[in-house]
Image (cartoon, rainbow over all chains, first blue to last red; front, top):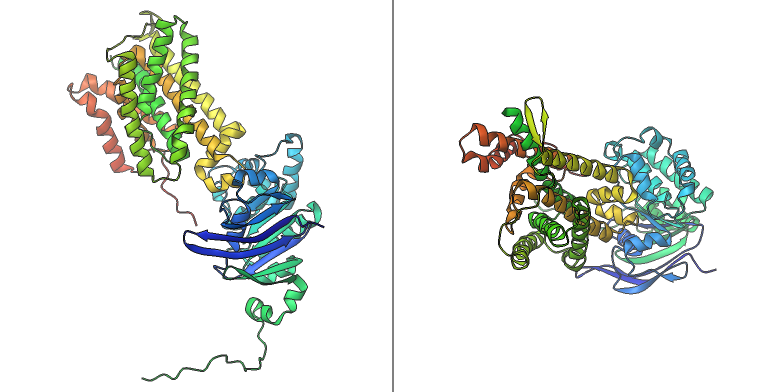
Length: 256
Length: 288
């Protein structure tokens, strides 16, 4: 079966600096796919290239069989891709209700909007309590919930999530990932997730790509990745006696 | 006498408020300070004059048509020129609007000559007596049209999708794109609305002052009104405009004659020294 999203060999530059160099990835319909990698690996750049904020220098992006590379961001949204950016990017001086209403901006089918609003409130009951408040006054976790809810109201087929756990307490991180799983299960929304928190991401996703300085170095099912020795050591922080012993470099002699 | 001056100051203040509103709308959405706002107003007044004396249309039809024509003018200007400048340094854009204002003044001079025109008075010299105060019907019209316009704009920005989208764009352009809002369309509309508001201001000012190619300089008095209210705040523009209009009129009566013309700036400096962000301004919030 054709994957929902097909990225082939994209290269993106920030000015003269190459940010991602030839990345290909597939996102199958109905799955949660995670992209893992350290700071500066190019995770956010991939998402921004998909959603049209950065035009790739080379390569193609296909969504449901249609080329979307080079499309403007507001057109990409209309194709059925919603992007929840890093740092949430809510509208601080609009109320929670108005923020959610903006999420549904591209929708034509206004008649079942109330039902969808209720559904979002079902995932995030706190948003109903805060309905009339300015979004800028919400806590970080509530803002993340608002950002997710706002994206859901566009009824996307594909949800791009950039670091949903950023700056949240461990309990909130657990809650948010639980909701991500529920959204995927109950709405059938495909999710492409970018995370630094590898453990949370791999327990949530079914498939994962590992990114290092602009390249995909490994991709496999989430279970396989969790078992992989390198992933364990570098991303999950599980220490194991290696052949070289626990010390991996010679201690430097200090001359004083 | 005091109340009398308040009444006519209110009318003048309304006109300042409308021009300031034009500044604020464009600035809020696009971060461009449009120094040609006063010239938009001048153009609106001249278009109305031509429609009324040339085409001999009735007053309210004239207002409607002139406002529509200026709306189209704003849209075309944005589409043909401003859109090409998106992403250029703000400084370049501001310089452009200053150039535009000079250009529009010359054009108006060529089309309508450099003479001073008098707008045909609609109500003649009719007055309404309220207690000891006599108010001209024109002043009442100015205040009520301004009030109506402000209410319409409030409803528009609060309850329509595109209006909220404009608010959203002014708060976070990146996120607006993510919502599928066409930011270009928002900019286009905001230039149109600003030009329309300016046209209303011009038509309302015309019977109070005269129509002349340089009448746009009054925009320089509306500018302090916008800053006073907190550049970027719509209620601020209204209140700022009213304060400047009222105080200017009162200063004209109770203070030496030369004070009247600089009084707007005296207030501006005084307020900004106490409250640099303006009356309704919010201090720049650092987002985390």
